[in-house]
Amino acid sequence: MNTIGRDKWPDWVKQVVGKKKNIEIKERNGRYYAYEYKNTWDKDKKRPGKTSNYLGTVKQTGIQTPYEASLNGIYEYGHVKFVWHILKKNGILKSLKRIYPDDWEVLLVFAMNRLIDPRPIKSINK
Image (cartoon, rainbow, N blue to C red):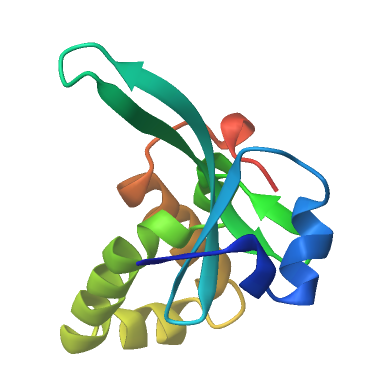
């Protein structure tokens, strides 16, 4: 991950970040990540240091925090792909479509959600 100087930020990143101070942008594979940093004094090494805190991914609409990203299912992709692969390989998905032709998608979504993120339906965000 490469830190990019403020003068080399794309215009849309500058617009999203605005005039905020102590913001550092890192780039990797065309994606931009925002960090808040603070300059500190390291008493043991007797020299200045820097501490940084990850804010989130820079999107055209703003900075998406890790919590917001998890609500969008980004962190659960691997689990879902694994379950989907097992369902297809064992023919369970085909049977589900045959037995419940109108409702198989809803049943699958609720079952996979319950398997991957077990919590009551009333706690599930839209």
